[in-house]
Length: 111
Length: 115
Picture 1: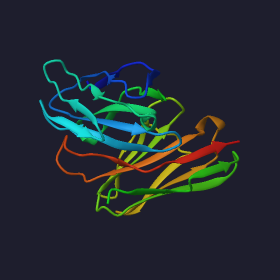
Picture 2 (picture 1 turned 90 degrees about the vertical axis):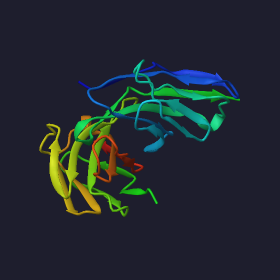
Picture 3 (picture 1 turned 180 degrees about the horizontal axis):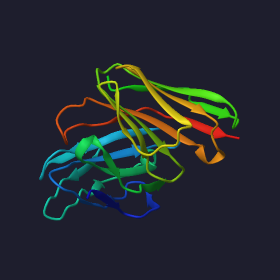
Picture 4 (picture 1 turned 135 degrees about the vertical axis):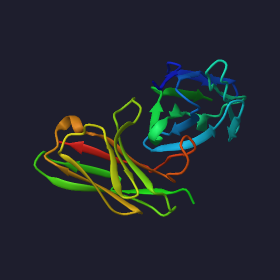
């Protein structure tokens, strides 16, 4: 079946630190992979996506590469800002257009 | 434009009330979704409409009743809810194109409190 395993949080970093949030998946077929971000009190916003192996999604300084050999889609950012404080969800799009979400990782960036 | 709008933003209701949540998108998407999200948890799928027909109901209690009047609108009718139904209710839409290629776009959610 389909599932997503996401790095446990919460994560606290200082401004300008390097960020990695790990995400691995189990899937049948060739799923698309996504990172969504949820700021406090808001809905989910699409951060980036990748639809096939070796694709790199990027947006707002965040990057993630679809690694089929390690079944991973880790989120990275070279220099985080206070405004990046949010909950980050890794997700897999399976058959029937159903999303399988990871449990979410809360990130707090301190000045 | 990738906007999904939801109203109201906040809703407080008693267990005997009847209320409705509304969701709207004008992106021409043909699939629309309702999710429920509890605090510090990922969204849980409730319903999926594809081409205005209910295609997935994830064993949701009958006190939640979805409706898709047209391809741009999605409602969630609420009746006789329980306090444990308090949550953020998210609407999403997608193009309903090729398998595995669709991105879901989420609205800001309605934060529901049942007293």
